[in-house]
Image: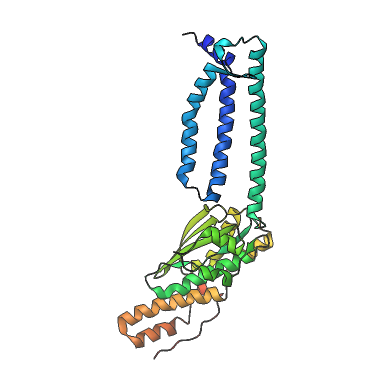
Length: 320
């Protein structure tokens, strides 16, 4: 078989033009199906059916393009058309016009799709975030206050970034139930493009925090990380997290904002860590010597050590 002659015959029979036209029309149909069908609750298998039917139809369309020519008089067998005659030339022109028309439709569809997506997003700024309540994975469920405290510290640090819209803590507390969360709906309800969720696990003197940043508009992961810190080191965790979240959202921090974000907490954050530290000591002493020794442990923890010098002195607790 002479390949050069075969390809020349494909060109003479306008099979190349037909392939281009079919590909453009198929792409347009698939885009319309994926965009329109969900609005009418058409099941997903219908979209798959359209795609499979278009793939199967391609060789059939090429076979028909080989056998027939599209002329002003209708479909005519290619063998009956003189390629150098007026009918042969008009068949090529018809396909050219059809390709141009399909291209214009594709351009119009892409422009409409872009405008539609912008309208669907509304006025939700891309640099906006809601910090959802963190899950408490600690064995002691009473440590839920510790998870809430870390969420609060992160939210406070993010609020110091002027170029970032941060939703208040009171607005996000309604979404504490993890099983009932729908991140797309949460994003629409709160008017944010991004949602931060995570979990906290405290084991004796260590804290493990897992966080993930979600694009709520498209329900996809943007960034995630895991942090394993001692109780003392966890004081600076919120600043590290806020900086990495800002980088993930492409938010530029001024030197002043960076300094404010990285400042370790000296108020509620310190008290949260010191309370956890007191709890660890008390539990150990209770197990070893009962109520009186437990009270002595809490009294001794009034002297927090050099790593907590910036923290306010916690109130003395005497259980004796």
